[in-house]
Each structure stands twice: as structure tokens, then as C-alpha cells.
Length: 150
Image (tube, rainbow, N blue to C red; front, side, top):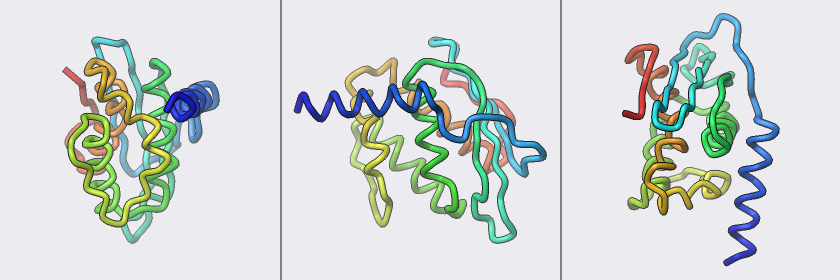
């Protein structure tokens, strides 16, 4: 189990140091800002949906702790190319994974996201891990431009 935990830590550190899909998207079709006042994490997610409501491009910018940045990076890799309905299913599955609830996995590829499952042992870190996911969910459903973990 120690080897698995070490691997997970290495993946989180890699995504923190070299976040994938990091940067601003010019002229996004959807965007939202996320703030975790407790930890100081702040990010904005940008999306470009195609004519079939599939996520063509997803990226983020901002600053935050290693868990927040790694989660946003992994999220962008996971959601690129999926439909809005699939993104909603990933949102539900990741939230369950992070909080220790039963994970609905129907047809979802969660292996990359499992590296963040350890946050369920640290309730204050759940907010760090889920911030980007709440922001992308808000962006997709036009619920405003800012979400907060508080």
C-alpha cells in the first residue's frame, strides 16, 4: 500500500509542477471562477463546446495548493472530448470519490482520478480537490461566474 500511496503522491506532484491544459482560452463558450477562501485557491476554468455540446477544449488558470492544481489538471484531461451529460457524470463520480461516498462508475474511466481519493481522509482537502470540478459544473450550467467552497 505504501508503494501505491507514493505513486499517487508522485502523480499529484507532477500535475502540480506541470499542469496540463494550463492557461487562458480566448473566447470560451463557457467559463467560471472558483475560490476556496479557506486555503486561498483561486482558479478560472474555460471551456469551448462544439456544435454537439461536447467539450472541445478545457483549460484553467489560477493559483492554488498542489491538490487543487493537480485536480484541475487531471480534470481537464478527463473532460476533453466528453459531452455535457458525461461531464456531469464525472462530476458526480469525482465528488463521491473525494468524499468517500459510493462512486457511480457506469462507463466512466476513473483510474487517473483515483490518485486524489486519499483526500477523503482529510476533510479540509476535499474542498481543494473539488474546487475545479465545481467551477466547471457551474460553467457548463451557466449558474454564474463564481463558485466558492464556503
